[in-house]
Length: 159
Image (tube, rainbow, N blue to C red; front, side, top):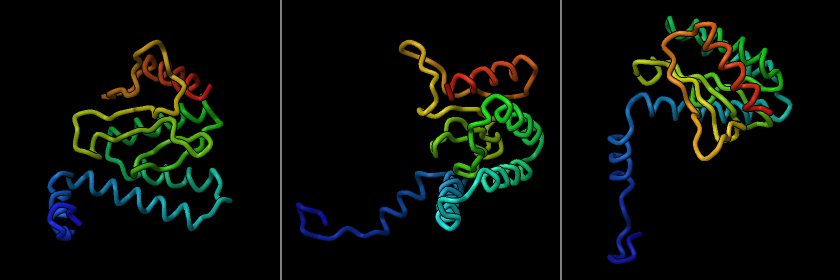
């Protein structure tokens, strides 16, 4: 209700405005997140790493190349570098969590129709270094140098 006019606002204008503010891809990601939350509720607190890993592997399998190959390699690097992290999906993307909080994630270039994939860290990652540090990286391909750097960053993120 508008306090000045005493009239109730229509929900239509808010919905119409929101649909113009978000892209189709962003709305799809929000729907995926809602489905993830519902699935987690259905699985209950006893759901294990296997459920999350199956979800992540299924999302990776859906990706077009070259993102699929990068995601598969990142999955292996993260599991080797930080076995304590639990794979799960987050907004329809492969993500890795510690104590239920996402620490890092991979975003396919195709997800939001961007020119590069992204590997990023949430604020739960222990990467603080001075007053400024990177939290996301653009990925066009993975070479041995990038793989080593990602492994080091993931280890630091969970330390």
